[in-house]
Length: 202
Image 1 (cartoon, rainbow, N blue to C red):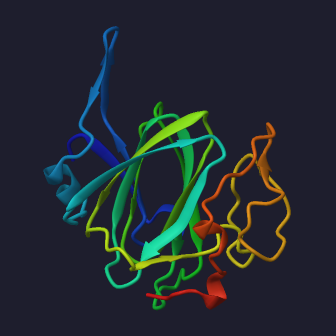
Image 2 (image 1 turned 30 degrees about the vertical axis):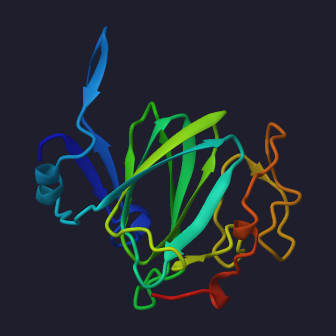
């Protein structure tokens, strides 16, 4: 392979990949290829991307866990500023790892990328003051097709770093905060998702 190193089946979950680009740096700064189709195909990753997205979030924001039901998206995600803890949950009904999760810290320093194929719920928690988050998608966004999964479902048991608080039976952010006192910040919609046993399966 050329400019990337790929850890396949990250966390023992088939399909998840952590990708590390080769960074060329000197006293002036650095250069790296953030995407190279040839290198990806040589690593066995043949997905076709059709849309690029970027978001900016403040510390304590948790986005997720999201998926599209009829038009599922594979996502190649990275952070260009700050730090997030990025999570994928397997919702593929025929998968031996159904309901399992894997998380990885993505930062502007480590420059790691995380590929999450179709059939997963996805979300992230912002650990830095500001985080700018970029991702490529294998399908377009379809309004009205979005589904979600409770970020704190105890049946899944995601271990969100730096987060304190006790599960009260819902996805509400009430009572949760980061270790430095920053309150957890979720959208109204993300506080209404239900747990694994009541959610969508692919």
